[in-house]
Image (cartoon, rainbow over all chains, first blue to last red; front, side, top):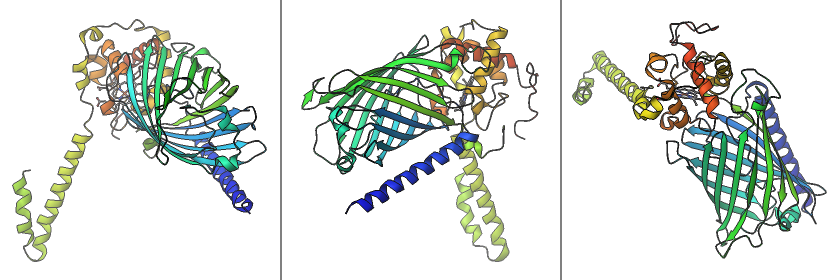
Length: 303
Length: 166
């Protein structure tokens, strides 16, 4: 009895996703530029904020085949805007497709990042505040907290979509840049706003470096200066009722980014589950491009 | 431009007939001028105050790549990619983002001063930090910016624009 409605929702979702893709492709054609100076992380945030006036558009996807469940592809469209030098705001739209199941829109997030110290220090803190309204069918895996488990990923969409999670997420982001290396550490605390659940905790760590620290002076395609590589480690840290590694998911993987000259930046990473509570491997892919100085599009050229 | 001028106006505006229009218009103009001044203060043009914050060890730092043609060429590519969107392709400034071919950047600021600015940015005033960009790249950009020379001089292979505000 429910089928016609859910089919209609799935169709609408597909139509929405298709139009978003069309808009992105249009922007892609005339306004795109490689995304700024971001390290190649998927889960870890660095202390680098978006340049004021820039809009960065990213399409991120996560693919996995959990044991006892169907393979899925989680997708996120991210719109990141630099409001001020010390304040970045970002809006996320999440969706997913599960093989032998369905395609659906799973919710949205809105996050703001603030840099309290305006000068550069050895460790640079950034405060992150997010409001999340997603259902449990969300497969973006943008953070792992509490006792998140691979078993959650095997729940059929029809059941998972019914449970809506309204959550507030806080992160303390610490970032350092030393001799071309970037080191980033995130501490995550998440609280459900519509359920009486305990605070959930998680972490994410990243280290990366461009393959070449200076520019060759040529506009080349496959040269080292267009690549950065590193690694990411992240996972849950339990809840206020049981803090620690017990019954948590943990992932580790190498990451690489390729900034196509005058084009988008592509990020790629296989991330491996470190215990039985994690998926064996998550394949992550992201394409990111910048609409530089959105205000300038409406100004006269070169003004 | 004091408050009394503004206070006096409503009384004058009571003058009947056409005479009432002129002072009212003057108030409007005055108000517009005040708004404009306030706006200018808010958008305060780059005043170089950052130079006063540069510690002496940065001020005297020499650019290890100064004047090297390969470094300048590298800096040009990086400048086009990272800086031109705000400071203009020709570095002559864009909107309220200042020219980097000013007397201040070309003569007053040392390469060490600019290195300090790129590391820290001026976040409150819209200049991002470039600390995530490796140091050799930052020195290349500085070598390139300094090679452009002041606005009046022609940059190597470049044609400076005539008038910024046109």
